[in-house]
Image 1: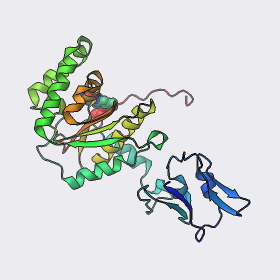
Image 2 (image 1 turned 60 degrees about the vertical axis):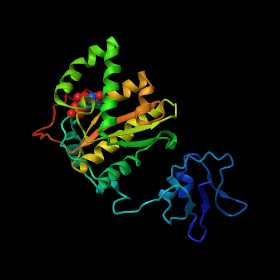
Image 3 (image 1 turned 180 degrees about the vertical axis):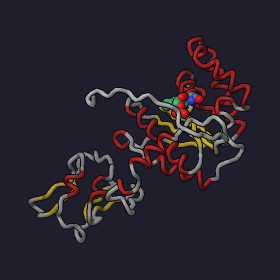
Image 4 (image 1 turned 30 degrees about the vertical axis):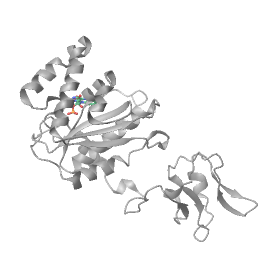
Length: 269
Ligand SMILES: Cc1cc2nc3c(=O)[nH]c(=O)nc-3n(C[C@H](O)[C@H](O)[C@H](O)COP(=O)(O)O)c2cc1C
């Protein structure tokens, strides 16, 4: 049981844990005269809200990783302004031109760490990660994805033009010769798992951008792997829910954002 209980030497009985727990596993015991943690059915989601909200750091836990305290954690709006993050998001582009330069392990790890701070449905944390940097394997997968999507008349009609351009420009057309392709996969077959994978990819892409890296989501691979699960074996990933993006140093400069027409928002008109 990763939440082991309460450190009563630190606990001030403020009951923040009781308010924090979405499943109601903390309560004041009249018999013991203090707050207690009770999860008889072992359904704690390990969300860590109790740990994060306890002012005294009095929740005892193990095997849940590390909890961090830093300037701004109590007021995240002081870490980054709306204007800064909006401009940062506006500046994100799908990068389809990369420098012929590998990203160091240290920098790759930074991106992969950020991805693991993404929320996951039910806090399931069922995802697995793979960074693929082997050119031969990337070429084999690129060829297989292209073949799969050109085999079917419906997908051929959508993708043939893009693939023809990529063929002319790159040795590894589906991945734009990016030095790295990141895979997130999960075998958990719940509907929300697609959302979870998408959010993890988005965290990774935004984190990558802070490090001077460019990325492009690769729905082609996701689609081809859903049509033909054997493609997953080429790179050794398991699970039906898959997120894929290319990553490397961009070999392209943007002078302005792409335009976006703002949608009318019902309720705000
Ligand atoms: C879920 C998803 C899948 C995508 N798949 C691909 C893809 O397979 N190949 C590609 O070149 N771009 C892909 N894109 C990038 C979109 O085409 C791109 O986001 C869109 O054209 C807007 O351009 P921007 O990202 O530069 O703003 C994907 C984007 C998303 C959100």
